[in-house]
Image (tube, rainbow, N blue to C red; front, side):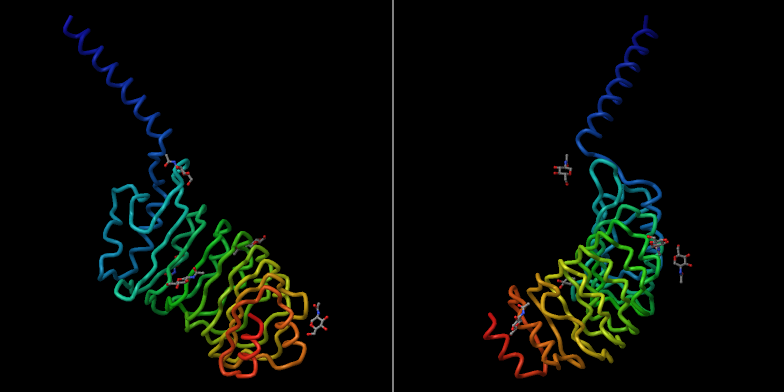
Length: 274
Ligand SMILES: *[C@@H]1O[C@H](CO)[C@@H](O)[C@H](O)[C@H]1NC(C)=O
Ligand SMILES: *[C@@H]1O[C@H](CO)[C@@H](O)[C@H](O)[C@H]1NC(C)=O
Ligand SMILES: *[C@@H]1O[C@H](CO)[C@@H](O)[C@H](O)[C@H]1NC(C)=O
Ligand SMILES: *[C@@H]1O[C@H](CO)[C@@H](O)[C@H](O)[C@H]1NC(C)=O
Ligand SMILES: *[C@@H]1O[C@H](CO)[C@@H](O)[C@H](O)[C@H]1NC(C)=O
């Protein structure tokens, strides 16, 4: 009799657990995947976190609840990694972006503002094919801009401004990013010409090309190129020189914000334009 009762209780409990589990997944209480949690912990490993920004990142926890991490409530995949450094919060050390390649569904990656010393934007970045937003501005990452960025065909925002330690040419492969609305490459040590292929970025609304480096040649655009551009930032070594360049800019019907540093004639043109 007693045994029967216990059995019934056990069944009831099992049933409840099953129901709860079901309800949990319906109601979006999906936990992060093991593989993705391990990838995040590996990423954290090389980083010195004096301000405790990653203090919620612990071994046994559901990584979807960690600071800066957001997951799909259907699949549990990590969709966003948003670790923006403010003045007082700053991660230091070796940020190996390649350790994150198991986050195959990542759509948003923001590591801006940290002092990641001596680390490249790895060519593995091309594997994050679902990214729509990538912000590494003010992150002390070094190296060249990998041409593999051209693989991120969903990308809408690419902010690499003030990384400072990046050098070399702007890869023409960036022209494959046809959804790009925001491109900022300002204040790096880039050299070479601005690739003419960038004229194919038909959705571009913001273009930042102020330079500390040796960008040379002409602006490769003509009337009709980049028709949706609203903000254009030039300067440093790079200003508008030829008649054709000036004509291109003055014909941009949506341009509201022309920011040309060290080029007085053109700043007065900006005020007549807006
Ligand atoms: C799941 O995510 C979608 C889209 O982000 C959101 O609209 C919805 O409210 C979420 N559902 C739950 C239960 O959190
Ligand atoms: C970065 O991470 C990748 C993938 O885990 C690894 O293969 C590579 O050796 C790491 N690079 C460095 C410099 O630690
Ligand atoms: C990138 O992050 C910086 C702050 O670290 C922010 O000021 C900037 O607006 C961000 N860029 C985009 C495109 O959101
Ligand atoms: C980029 O995409 C091409 C094909 O679309 C693929 O062959 C290549 O492996 C990708 N490279 C990286 C680094 O993702
Ligand atoms: C561009 O502007 C010039 C004069 O500023 C004008 O003659 C030319 O027709 C314009 N081109 C287009 C495509 O609007």
